[in-house]
Length: 407
Image (cartoon, rainbow, N blue to C red; front, side, top):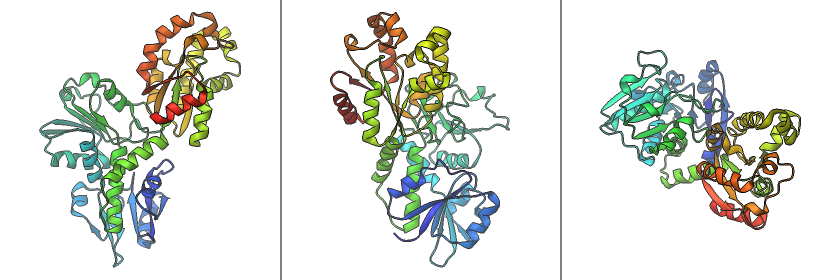
């Protein structure tokens, strides 16, 4: 497909759009990062065939368009612009389609329900229109500077659906949230338009409570599919959306290894990193580098409490990154905050190896404690944090092959 396509926005360094559009067709898709005052000139030049629009210009672009689709006008925001055959620019809102698809995929039914929407910006406008059209019984919009702000949600603790349409919790400010789900006793579903990280704290909180939930990766992929249909005036099968989500989810999230000290996490991690063309991060190595001393020295000087504090700081940082293989220390699971930090953007795999073959050299806790007792205490935590458990016995290559089958 000839022509020039792309995305215009403010900060695009972490955009997934090029990867998504590469799965939709063979066409050039570029990122056009610009300041607000540059948007008008870019559109006036019309040196493109079609573009998507992201934060913060979905309203900014509207005065520069010759035509705007009725749904986009109703919503009040445009995220897809097509240069038509006569050279005019027409704007569409494909986020509407994307969010509708996302709710359906997540099994979240808003019909007849009280829906609490967090945020009143451009994304919120789309969400409001979708849930209204789907028959929500009541729609409450919360924002920072209105009477219904995030500190005064008590009258709305009976909300059945919560939708986050703000950037709170988005990379790099991971693991932040606007609401405590404990307060919402009638909650039936949670949706978050954020897709980086794959699981925001809001998503993780819903997961813990077994509440149906879904992240913005489906919305992003579905709206891209709809945009491509406008780009090329052709229909794409919906199956391509699931294909995009599956591929992106695997390629961009981390592979995280947990297990007892000496179970082979670093060795297996090296083999996985080589196989998938990823970087291996060993959190124990990062701890040594940060402290400027060996792990036995840290334990001798600061005790386990000091070591765990450094470890948690490391986990918080590496957990928010993508496309890594992360080998963790054996006791990473004893610090509760590490659970969300690791699960937010990764697939956690527990390598379960027989205790009697685990080495103890250079491992202060393994030398100090009864390994069987340690394993007995940690096993429930390993199983709580992991997405998959694999047999860690046999050669490292055999363990890697078991993990590859799961992935």
